[in-house]
Length: 120
Image (cartoon, rainbow, N blue to C red; front, side, top):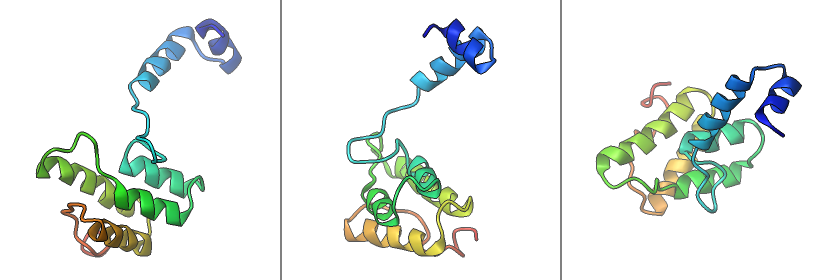
């Protein structure tokens, strides 16, 4: 379909469709073996019922941002995990299970291991 056809079908303008497609093109694909392109996106999929708890804990436990090269960049990944907890995408038990899995796998982490300390 052309952008004009899509716009008509959705009751939008062609420029809004063009803008949405440009924005969507900037969204990275999930790495192989993961359900989302970020920690937060994986947590969102879990909350939406698109991912089982076991898969969530496994994926977030294994997550290593391919662009992470420094401790500062790793904190960005940790911040997403903490934000997912704070925003209600993860409960305390899941959050702790993810941290335990990360620790068992030797993943670096700078997060505080309790929900209360993380801002709850």
